[in-house]
Length: 176
Image 1 (tube, rainbow, N blue to C red):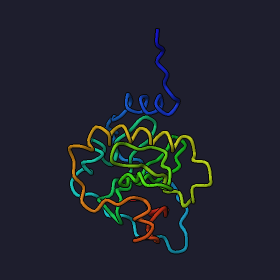
Image 2: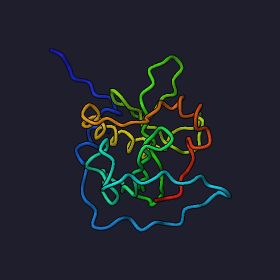
Image 3: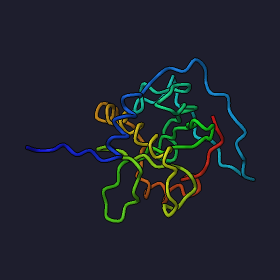
Image 4: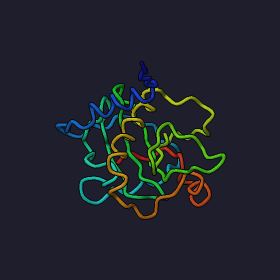
């Protein structure tokens, strides 16, 4: 008799998928986010109602406990999702092309073709806020459903982004 084992990350991904998209009545009212002296320009908002790789998510959607505030078009090699957690804290997820090379940075979530990184200005040495990591897992489930049917031009791995756009990677963007 075989037993079926599920890891905590897999379980959270499945729970995220189960509660995937519930349209929000209105976009979340932005809270007081702290601004740095010279924040980078926000990524451009995707044309239309969202970005096809994360469809059907769009601004105002809810994915599990998180509210989507914005989704960028491909910018500096990635698609950035701006989310707000249940406590009201905003955070950003960067969707990059998957890097299977030796020494590649580890993302909190990945699919066959993409990785979802928390854009929190960290260097990978700090622990990920668990709730934000769970949001990355939930977004990965949506990406997984779309990734083989959608072609995105200009996507880069995190290492390629760090090389080409070092000032744009891992930065906290101005909310869209």
